[in-house]
Length: 300
View 1 (cartoon, rainbow, N blue to C red):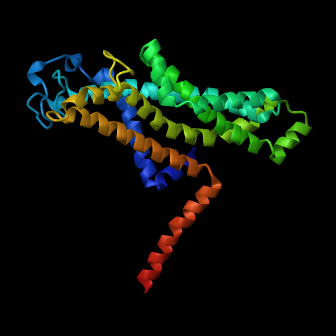
View 2 (view 1 turned 120 degrees about the vertical axis):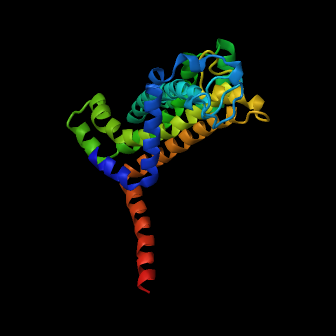
View 3 (view 1 turned 60 degrees about the horizontal axis):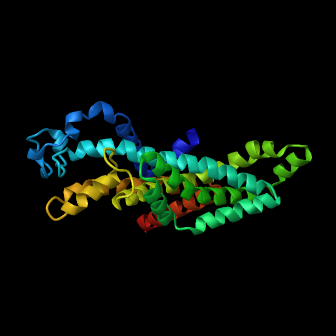
């Protein structure tokens, strides 16, 4: 952990992304304590209040929506639902997909091949189309959205985990453990899972951004989370009809979604490099070359 923190501090972009995501998570956790219920009620006198108007308090610094509610307060409250859906989806798909992939990669039995063929079939179905059909039939709610998005993400983690397992099981220490009588469960828990987790965590960070964008897309299309729940995607959907007269209604939640997705992608790429010695050495070599060239230029 100390080494990872040291590498994070030396990568300025990843450090800023991590601090930004941490700040958003903290705001989402304390949202019920800092947002007054009155800010979420309709107030038609403040309908489409422009940004940077402090006459009604600093909560209206980002303006008001179509019902006169504080845009800043709604962004804070929506963070809780949006991040909860994304985190639950990625966590469930990581656990289930990693278990399927590691077990399938450890064994050469026929059922291992059958499992991966089923995963291939599921991956061949467009995830957004599958989510739209299921949500249209069952109905939209946060648990249902988490369930369907988890199903669409499991194949990604399963194939990644299986690829890692196929490579790890051929290493000498795994063969030595087999010769010494180690069981498949022992190999799975003590050897394969710890070595595969860094790669899976890197994929999870990237998928976090993808899941958040998918949830926002479904909500924007009207088949995702519905009122009285609120998400950033729902705020964009509500505000897009007022783009000509009240552009801020859709701009602020859209910017938050884009910034969170960018920060999660940067952090995921950094995590992959930080846990791969080859990529880490290549990155360090690239950073030394410009420094050496600038030193030569200065001496000249």
